[in-house]
Length: 333
Ligand code: DGJ
Image 1: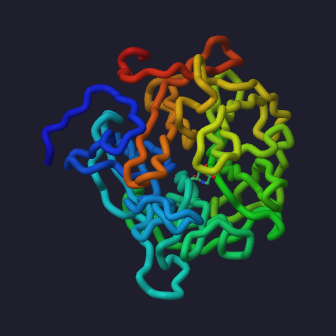
Image 2: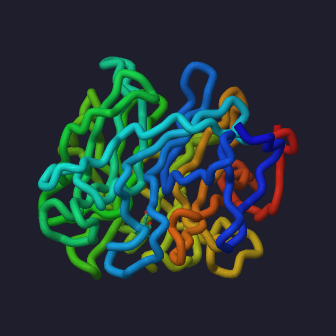
C-alpha cells in the first residue's frame, strides 16, 4: 500500500515519468477503456499495454500479453487494482494468444440477463491492424460480476464482413437499449462512423444501423446525453498522433447529427495532446460528466497518461472542454 492519497485530478505530462499511480504505488495502465458505476463504486477498465517502445506495425507496446485490467474507486481519485478481467492466453493458436489487442474495451450491464457485457476492438496475434478476418473484429465477453473473470464469447463484424472494425465504443441509452459505435473501414480511405443497435442481450448486432456520413474519417467516439441532446466527441484519423477533436450533436442516436466543431477551448489542434476514450456521467451528480482521454506515449506505451476534464455546457445545446492541469469534483458540483 503506498501513502499516496490523491484529492484532485492532475492531468498527465507527456513524459516518461509522470503517470497516475494506483493505491499500491504502481502505474495505472488501462488503455482506452471506460468506467462503470456498480454498487457504490466506480470500476475503471482498459487494455494493459506493454512497456516495449513501439517497434512499428503493431508489434510494439500497442499490443498486450496480459489482457484487460480493472481498478476500483469510491472517489474517482484513488484506484485499487482489481486484477485482470479478460486474460490473454499462452496457448499458441488460441484466439486470445498474445501479443494481441483488445482495443477500446467498453462494458455495459444488461438488467434482463444480469450480465456485464464487454465489447472490444479485437486483433488476433500478433496484434497488427489488418482487413483479413481476425485482424479487425468486434469481440465480446461476459461476466456475472463487474470484476470477475470475463468469458470470451467470440468475435464478429457488424453490418457485413466488407467493413473492418477499428476504434469502437458502447452506449447504453436511457431506455436500456445498447448501441455499438465504431469506425467501419472498407479500406484505408473509406472509413466512417457507424452506429449499430445491439440485440436485447447485448451479445450480437441487429440489422438496425446507420452510417453517420457527417462523421466520415472520424474515430475514438465518446457519447453523452444531456438537455435532450446526444453529444459525440471524436478524433480524426492520424493513428497515434494527436489531431483536433470534433463533436457532433443530435436529438436521436440515429441522427441527423450536426457537426459542431472542436470542443477544446484554446487548444493547439491536438485535443490537449490526447485522444478521447469515454465520457463518464458522475454518479448522483446529474448533468456532470468527465471526458476521459488518453495521452498516448509511443516511446513507452506502459506510461501513457490520462487527461480527464469536466464537460462544460456554455449553452444547453453546446459543450466545451477547458484544459486544467489540476481540478477537483467539488469545484463543479
Ligand atoms: C488505433 C488508432 O489509430 C489510435 O488513434 C488509437 O485510437 C488506437 N487505435 C487505440 O484505441
